[in-house]
Length: 94
Image (cartoon, rainbow, N blue to C red):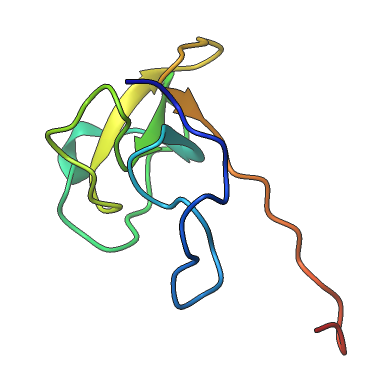
């Protein structure tokens, strides 16, 4: 098994592709053990050497929930962790 090219599956209701299972999503939030899977959108600590990674990866098949959160060391590269590029469209954009 390995990562797959983006966009091979149908998008979800929001038009987003590949939300689960390809690679963990590296997030801006700092990680705190106290909110591992508790709340929909927790506020993390201001300082931590860990960032939140969410979801799951092809290598870790046990949990692909978008609510799943783990801590991941900052500035560390790993083949099962990636990030999502988001572009906000201006008013009147389709």
